[in-house]
Amino acid sequence: MKNLFYLFSCLLIFSPILFFSQIENTIDVKAAIEVKNAENMISIHAKAINNDDIVHALNYLLISIKRSSNGNISNNKQEGRFIISPDERKDLSQITINYANDDQVKIYLFIRNEKENQLVSKDSLFFNVKSDELLSHKNNFSNEKDEIVKEEDFELKGLVVDNTKSKIGKDFFEAFYNIYKDSTDQFAFVININELPSIGRNGIINIDTSDKNIYSFRVVPNDDYIIAQAQITMRYLNNYYRESKLLDKELRAP
Image 1: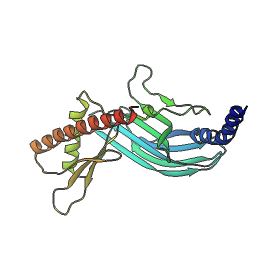
Image 2: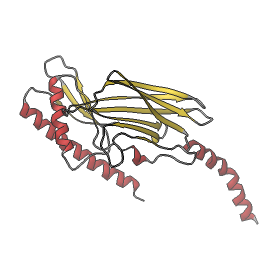
Image 3: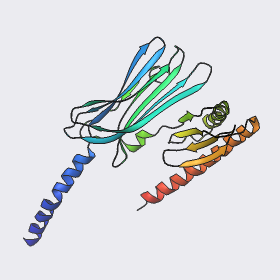
Image 4: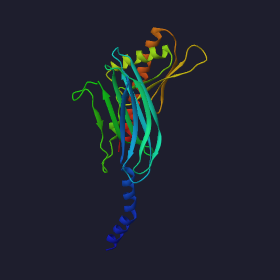
């Protein structure tokens, strides 16, 4: 009888904790991409829709990637934090890009829980992208009360964001991207190619992920040097990927 009383007391103590934890981990906020076309321009609107009756503090990542018919790639990335009230439909960000009928465009919107950095919802929109299903399709992920989008759904394999400014920086981006797209390894994280301003002629290129600077070098207007730096960058990324996989495996080990 005492054991039953003790068990009942523990349930009374911990039940509220479990209950509120379940509420906290169930976030019914939907990511939504809306697009408007006008005179060869695409206006991309990222929105969040809160179907919950509580306030949420979240963050978002909006990415657009355009590949023209001649193979040139341009992209845009916007991210930030936001607070959304119950039953609110919130405008997060807007991107406008030039668009020709034969351009390929990929648009991704991700919403994550700021506290636990867990993916809550995502939306994507593709134009002129060949697939086994449709040439142009939109993929919305449901946000039912008992469903949280899995972490692996956030993976964007092979995505490189070009934040270079000079011609030399653009040359490096193209050299690296050509090596990367032909490699067997397509990393499940976004690679940012950032060019920093410099007093002299030669700027500095930083290769970054979301949480770490992988490699930095000063650009030199020499084709062989640019290709060599692209190859070195690939080696550093391979090392980072292997180390992160080993660390993840150790953390998951019992």
